[in-house]
Image (cartoon, rainbow, N blue to C red; front, side):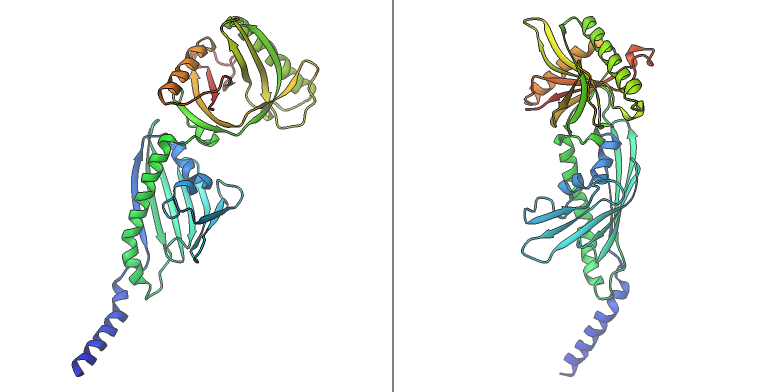
Length: 344
């Protein structure tokens, strides 16, 4: 009996003393190299709607309900999650970001102590590769809760690595957000979720001769620019990039029907030969063509071949957005045109 009592005393003392030698916080750090431009990887953390699709704590759990704060990205963005049927819940908030450099977040209730800080750093290795460092650390854990932290630290690193595996797979197939699309390199073909838009346009019907199409486009854009800037007095910086939407290109009749226009956000009453036109929202196949406008048909054909190879069914229409000014660019090889083809 005496020995048993001594054993209990030693056990109690051990329970009281051991936390002194255990970690005061839960922390983990992982690194990973992605075969994607830095802007694409950065937005998976900076845009919390994207982050919530693959983060390892609630990924794939159909019982979890999420409610988002506004905005969805950048500083101040956040969301809460609640697991139906039990008391599990959590919250995440973006505290600070620096584009393509780092994202800092605060976590509550993610099995990482009461609150935790998370930082993700991005280093571009080249135009197509990005090194990511992901670090998470909880605030100081209560004295007796350090037993839990001792076992949770290893699990946390496993969680982060699991999340990066999810993200790697996602980046191979997920459509790009508009922000991620800004990182698209000329020549690369990707899918992108297009949010839709409104144009003020002039309708053209021409032959398939590229020079005739170019001439009609230049005249339409010139007339629209004069109307918007000189007559309506819209500042040029408030106008979107010139865009051409091809309703059809009929090789049998050798005719093309297309709308030339500028994206607008203001309410505008067009002149008689102008009309408002809506670009459809939805998933699109996109690529940025670098070079002369005359070689755009070859790029579109390349995109169609890519779609066939990857079993992507495309729509019949497409549109082009001219990213730089043809008059300001002296070398036609430096012209940049973004091509969109809707995916059915």
